[in-house]
Length: 343
Image (tube, rainbow, N blue to C red; front, top):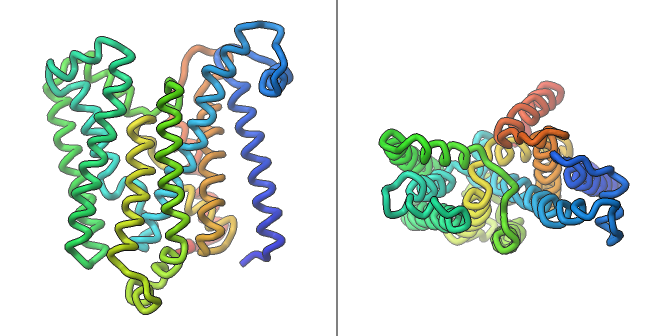
């Protein structure tokens, strides 16, 4: 365990690292904008080239802000699931919520002439994708909540969530098998994940969803700490198991489902960042873990998106590829170095 002073210094360093990663992300892209000019634009000054102002404020700043929300939100949802199920392999998508969002998106893009006809208009397609993915994740979340209210075994709930994920994945596979090539390609591109191409209204809506999910997570800190020693111990401390479990599931559903609806199914971050944070801070206290996990998740997503930009190139790599290739070796190295897994 680290001292309070050490925690404060650590959080200060992480916050500075987040600011640097954010600035680096904003200054990177297919159009080369000098770092000094990027700072001037962000501070309200005019740039040498008028188009740079438009690029920074209308594309790069919303994308960087979205990366913070996506990375932090997915990491928190992964932490919630790992604590609730006391399983190091649990992630934000174990309850099938992400699969429900993928099913909603698949129905829009590949589910028939009535829905897929909306895809001919880009603006309507963006709206319909987000709405359909949100509805899909919400419906799966609703079913999981109903099941959670009827069973007492948390591990059984984990298995049921995985089964829901398998069912929705099977339906998506059937839709993909009978889909036309161009519609299948659109769905594949969506499944790669992206933190760009969101309108101002979509970023605002995503911010609200993530904020509510984070608020529920903070309100569940005492319950999460009690769950670490098992449900019987938590119950002996006066924790209402059903209510606390539903609150944690709702928080995870809002974070994972909302982020998947707007940014696509982004893998690895929610599973790995909580482990990464535990190894660095050497604690299980959620008052420390929740803010630290959010900051580390935001930093990782910003760095991965910066690498995916391929500076000086118009091509953008899939964010899922970068998160796995960059993040997985780091976590492996930390686990080998520590020679133990905190849980």
